[in-house]
Structure formats: C-alpha cells, structure tokens
Image (cartoon, rainbow, N blue to C red; front, side, top):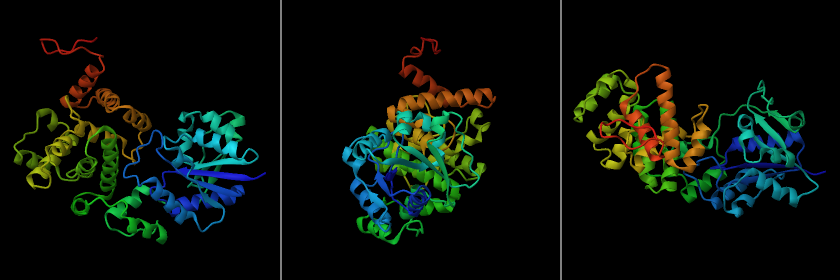
Length: 397
C-alpha cells in the first residue's frame, strides 16, 4: 500500500524548518511521497503580508525540489476559497483510494485539534503525524478515544527555532537569514516580495525597543494589515500603525509622562495608578511631537490601542484587535478571539473588553474608564443594554 504524507501550510515563505519537518516525517513513517500543499486562505487564521498563491507555490517548488519524495500540489490554491483540511483529505482519498494518507502538522496543534472543522472525519480519512520539536514532549491525548489515539503518532525531531514571521521580519529589515535556501531567497529578492518601505521606521524602533517588543510590533503590523484589507481600511496605514503602536513601551515612566504633557495632555488620577497604559498616549505623543506621523487616523488608533474607548473608529478597532490576535500571542483564548475577528471586529471587541473588565475586577486592579466605556459601547452595539438614560446611567435591556 502506498503511503502518502500531506503537509499543508501558508508557506509564507517556505523555510528550512518546513523542509526538515517534511523530511523527518517521510523518513520516520516510511512515506513514499509527501504532498506539499500551500493553503489558499486558512480558516481561523489571519496571515498578513501574504504572498500570492503563485509565488508561494513556486517558492515551495524551489524549497522542496531537491527531494524526489516531495511533490508540490496546487489543490487548495485551485479551490480558490477557504481551505479546510477535511475537504482536502476527501479529495485526496477519492484520488488515491488505495493509499494510506498521513496528515503532517506541528505537535502544538494537538491542543486545538478537536476544535477543527470535522476533526473526527479528518482522523478517519488520514492518520495524524504530530511533529514535536522536543524529545521529551508528552502529548495529552486524553480527549481522544483509544481508536483515535492509535491513529496519532507524535514524532520528535531536532529543535529548530524557525518561523515564517521571523523570516519576513528579517527580509523587511534587510537582514540576512540562514533559514532560507539560496534559491528561495533569490526568488523573493527578484520578485520584491515582503518589502513594505518601512525600513526607516524599523531602524528607529531597533534603537528604542527590546527584541521581544520588536517581534510583537512586527506581528501586530501583519495582523493590522490583514484586518484592514478585510474590513476596508488602508492596509499600508494599518501596517505602519501596528509597527509603531508600542514605540514608547520601553521608555521610562518619567519620560512617558513628559511626552504626554509636552503634547498638551495630562495623566488622570486613575492612569497614575496604572502606568501600564501610559504607552498608548505617550506613543501617540512621541510620533506627533517628532513629526514621524501626521495622519490623525494612525495617531488616534495608537492613543487608544490598549484600553479601547467608546465610539472607536474603524482604524481604532483594527489596531486594538490586531494587538490581541498577533501571531506570537499564545494566551488561552487567543484562537477564540481570532475566530471572532474573522466574524466581525465588534464581536472580538465585545469579547476582549469584557475579558479585561472581568479580569481586572477580580484582581481588584484599577479599571480604566475608557475600557469600561468600550465594553458598554459594544453591549449597546449588540442591543444587550439600552442607550444611556437621561441621568447618564445604562439600563439593562
């Protein structure tokens, strides 16, 4: 019986970590071939700065072309719609009825696999290979039946810290990266992929932010651009807003306060108790005072990206939610928020503002009035409370 692996992803771009994982799975499972499957639009994921399907397909051919076991497939790209794994496996099962199919993915997806669309059918159509980067990784398979567990193989492979997001960051910043094969890098450079004209801003950020905050800013930039394309704001403005939103995050508190006051503002008594929110206002002040940004849409979005507020504009909402769903975020509910963001910005804001209000209240920490106003505004938007009464109080519906 022929054994066929199915390795899907955005491959944006494909790097040596992808190739290593596919080769390790092919070796360990004795696969006759592995289908490399660039996705069209993955569900529940917001891949920003996404290179075109034709470019990602060609980069995959260049990256995986040296191993005769690998075959790059345009099946999901030809479908031209959201790519659900079960639909791909149904097609492959019909095309190769006598083959044993193996679906290859990272071990981290085991935590959310039972939330996937028709996950039980996926396991009936293909065996699952979860590739772990740690030899001592112990998967929790307690949510699966014994029969389902028998169809899941956890494959330990040598650790390799690699992500397409980090590769894109390096490319945009003009840095070299050993994560790309020369032929893939050459294709990217020839076709001008992933360049966004923001190198001067990145140079400024490198002098002001630590590495962790720089990475976060790039991820928020990506998420904001994707949301902007989806909901109708200028993606280039969104990308810049996301990149600069935390520009004063690593500044001292006295300097942040000085910036706010130099911009004609003043910290409220409540804000003085919660310095973690100062950077939204000091960031907007820094950008305005130094003439780095004059666009009021960007400045206003930066100024409320942490607390939110009532009456947020589309740019405000996009940056606020992008900060919650950026690629490096891994808090427990992040996948929920990402799915809500794909549904509507307002659904995501309702969920996140409520979460913030409830969490801070339980912790008996200061709750910014703008956050409470943001939550109430979303409750009114969905008709869960009535409009304000003449006395200024909200009345539950």
